[in-house]
Length: 332
Image 1 (cartoon, rainbow, N blue to C red):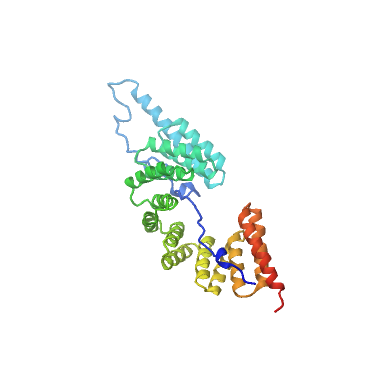
Image 2: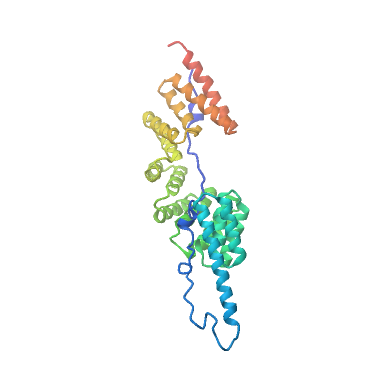
């Protein structure tokens, strides 16, 4: 009995992860929060309101400064809450800052990041939009708004905001990356590749652009370039399970089964719940005629697919499991 392996051949699996200005912790990459970093220039004596021609103006100006400082204090509280892992307190603090000073763009921006991490996509997008209104030169806010719209599958509007962010800051790596994701979804592989390459240039510590660059090369049949890209992603993050898996799929389709098995094992090692890695290992074991090992990993893959409500791949794994059990029980 022979298995129709071609119908089960491995293909690259896309892992879609929209990048922002690293949510964890927000303070590490968010717009800064003190008056110097916010580009608030020192006020002259007259600018502070002490103008004898306008009695009472100085009092109003001091009150405005006091309100601004109170808003900055709440912004800092929110950032400290983020560092402490208390997302709800952070959201409350950012909203209090905004209530005191609706023009404080970093408060809107960090609120957007916190809401997005909390899974509240629409409110996050609204907060990023308010940040762009408070500061029309705030490139990361436009980029994160584009990322939120991408997650909401509003691709054209996402492109508009991502391109605006890159007009403001052409070296904003995660904006290039998110634009690449849009082009990937649109199957515009050349544009996707160009964006991911720029993202790699400007976000050298992020493995995701290299991974998606590899996926785009796979779609073009440029296998060697894909391998190089996946290897680069792994060099940045050795625990990138999807990159290990896709390297394994390339080795498998090239008939290099030992290399493929090593890659699948590494993928499962760094993510024990990654069902595709076990499925791929099962295909390798069949090729190596190690049927008892294949049975074990197909069972594991099937059970994981069921747990993850991936019914179609659970069925595929079950079919291969039955065929492999028959092979394993066949007299040799």
